[in-house]
Length: 114
Length: 113
View 1 (cartoon, rainbow over the protein chains, first blue to last red):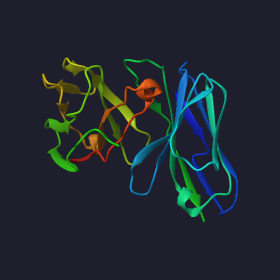
View 2 (cartoon, helix red, strand yellow; view 1 turned 30 degrees about the vertical axis):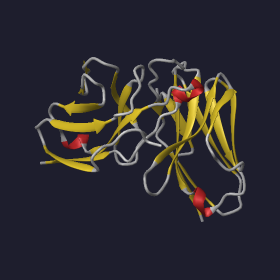
View 3 (spheres, each protein chain N blue to C red; view 1 turned 90 degrees about the horizontal axis):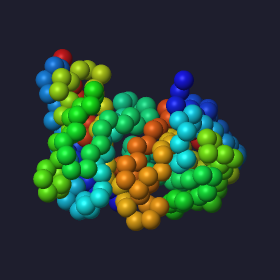
């Protein structure tokens, strides 16, 4: 069984559209994340939820809205897609711990905005 | 934002040990060092982590200097499948920022036949 799964794997869409990416983890973790990897391959955190509460919100346009219906799911909705949103989006999860914090990543969703 | 410094690329012959260095001179006393790798745009894969002592698992060994300002990831017998970008990560420790990983540019390891 895949520990952190994202759908869809590929997403091609037009500018201005609204799209969602879903993430589910079966590891029993209480914290989930969204990361963005741009064309230069830099991987940057966008959001993090702990027990369905937003705890990390990096400077991300408010067109991006994460939603966590429960601890095992963290979805990312993007409104009014722009060319610059083209990237690979990774979901991750971990057990929240002030000491060790091993994050496990999904396979990524490759978003192309045309 | 990355708190670590790594060489941009390294080559290693197949079957030989790959030693990947990382400087983290501003590390705090209770911060762990984590190593991940990313193979050809797949999701980052956890390798190993450590605090003060050297660590070893089935994938690699981690050597942390006594002053904790640098570390080395060792892949004892590199294979072609180990070709990847390797990230050394030190996370923040301020409030909920302890969950925040900073991925730098990493080291591209090229394992050659």
